[in-house]
Amino acid sequence: MSVLPHAFSDYNEVGDAAALFVTRLRDQKDAACYHVMLAWDGEDAGTINSDLAQARAILHAIAATAAKLGYTDLAASAMRCETQILAHLEGDYNDLAICPCEIICYLDAFVEACTELTGPL
Image (tube, rainbow, N blue to C red; front, side, top):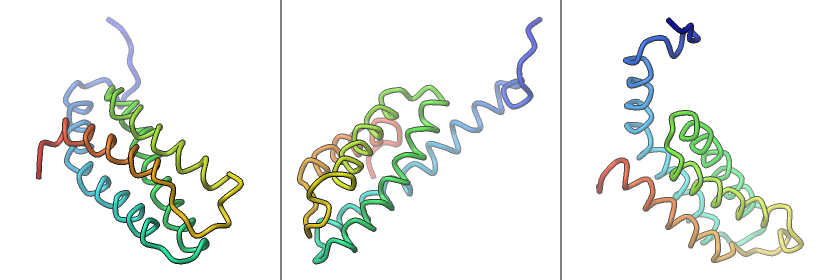
C-alpha cells in the first residue's frame, strides 16, 4: 500500500478537482480573451499593458492548474500565449499603443485547446 498526500489519496477528490477545473475553464478562458481583446482595441500603452498583464495572470493560473491535473496540451498552449504576452510586456515596444497580432494567434490556439476539453459553446 502506497502512502499518498491527503489531497490525492482519494481518486474522487482528484476527479472532482478536474471536473471543477473544466467547469470553470470556460469562464477563465472568456476572461483572458476579454482582456486581450480590450488590449487589441486599446488606445494607450498603459491600458493595453494592464489588460495584457491581467490576461497573462489568468493564463498563468490556467497553465499551472492544467499541468497539475495532467492536461498537458492545454497547459502548453496557455504557457505559449503567456510567453507571448510576457515578451511584449518586457520587450522594447511595450511603450507603444499596440497589441502584437502574435498574441491573438496564440490566444486562438489556446481557445481551441480549451474547446477540446469543454466542448463548443
